[in-house]
Length: 181
Image 1 (cartoon, helix red, strand yellow):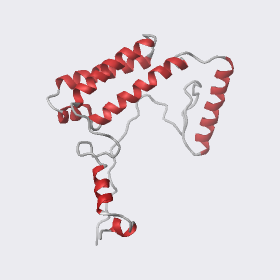
Image 2: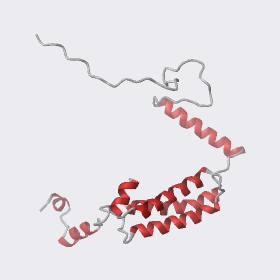
Image 3: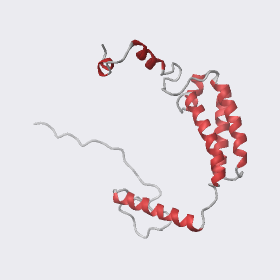
Image 4: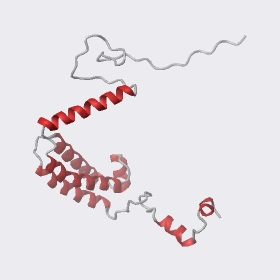
């Protein structure tokens, strides 16, 4: 018996086989199904995502980022000869993970539109957000994090945070060992 069977004595050959089948051969990730014809599926999802994002104002950064990312994925999928080549070029894991990302982003777009998240908060909402921001900053300071407020000009050089635009660094070199006598 292996260690897993000793920990779970009710384990049978069938349940052991089921555990092995739950990890997909293509993705090797539990819970993420392999997608046959993944690149055409991804291409179609990206087209749907480009259509879905049209409900947002053209100039907002979120929409521009989604369009840029979708176009990048479609161009990379078109230029790739295989799934492995696509995965290497994109560098975001397996293509099924990328498909999952696109699906998640598509689910967010209608919520983003409903929340009108591109608008600047006003009134009570702005006051609430400012209070939350102050609480988070104070919490970071309490934990010893160096926090630089960009809205407050620094009059003197900071001990905690470099103020120069270009900071000269030198590579680390270990101290020389003393000579043995």
